[in-house]
Image 1 (cartoon, helix red, strand yellow):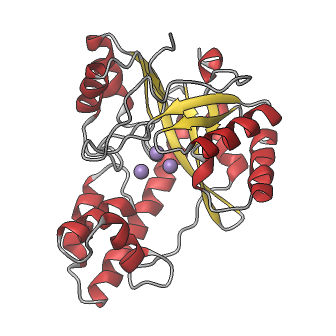
Image 2 (spheres, protein in one colour):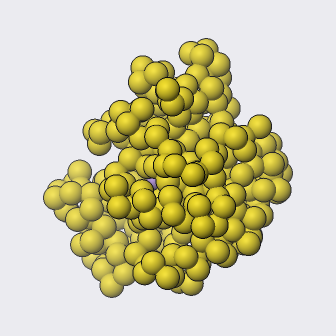
Length: 276
Ligand code: MN
Ligand code: MN
Ligand code: MN
């Protein structure tokens, strides 16, 4: 029997729609035994999530999903088991959140120039601790400016579109260092989502490993069997532990039933063996 674990989730502190307590209630209902909250570039939800987990008997792992740049691409690194009070990590997050707010404000201005109500569209993003473009994409979809959240990105927010604003992110080694120096383990998030060749993905994983990375997501909701096998072979090749999660953002999108994504491929060490 595999433990029911979910080490990648989001709350309304970033671009999830449930509060940390609501997220924990849902996880408890799904009989999750070990849950990590991994909001984008913020630890703010961890205290509330920890309290809610204690009340409902769910094991809690303090986490974060940090954004970094690598060769002109945006890469996500999940930190697990971090010390929420670590001041260097808090300073890092505060700087990233400030640049996120500035980017959202610039996007709103551009959308206004394009004839859309930019301030209204940016309002929900700017209410979140960690404002993201997903907030704006949802608002664009809800306002009828696009017929899905993905279409909102494609039509308004991607490079070359009216609301595109470039971003500068911290580099990969510094982000991995922030996590490890805060007592956490760094996990390369959703390797199947980076649109790179196998060779470039191997180079990314090699650099991640030499920077101090310890894990890779090998079982994530939405991964095809081929994606999962590729991630597992990277885990084995680079001696990285395997992590498991849903990347849950909202109940309207199905949360893959726990236990279905809780299987680890053969020959991959579970990340839980590295957690304190
Ligand atoms: Mn997200
Ligand atoms: Mn991500
Ligand atoms: Mn995520």
